[in-house]
Image (tube, rainbow, N blue to C red; front, side):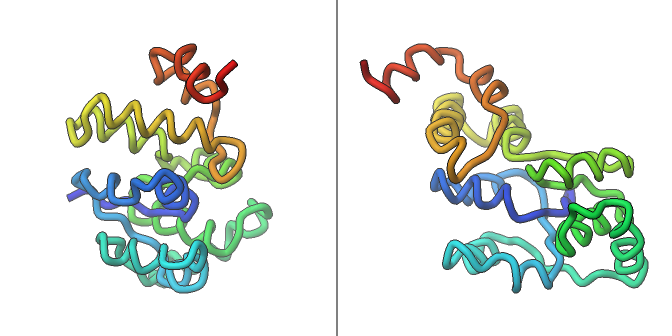
Length: 175
């Protein structure tokens, strides 16, 4: 089993497209700091309960993780307490960090932590044959439909994964 330290925003992306269960098809165990689970996963209503039911594991910070999170606060002032906790878990346990947050991604990369986001999870699902090509394309199209509003992903990367993007634009915005 592969353990992954998780931030919140990727779960929101999957919730927006009604595919919250998809990442749990992968052979990964997702950990999230217990305080973040109970204090940050409050909205949209029911998200925390759904994730816990699907298998998200609330993790207690070890003493080393706690002090690491405190130590990097000055180095990365844009990170929230929960962002620092997710990074601390990933760094000290040598795990991949699951996030789409730009500041957290940059900090993780600077700290030598591997990062994966919503698009990376979808790519893994396709690679591991946990979703069909059609389901993958539907997810990408749905993310594009919501991008710039509830979802904030690199538009170019989404478009690259949708082979018939011109046709998709016609469906989204009929002339």
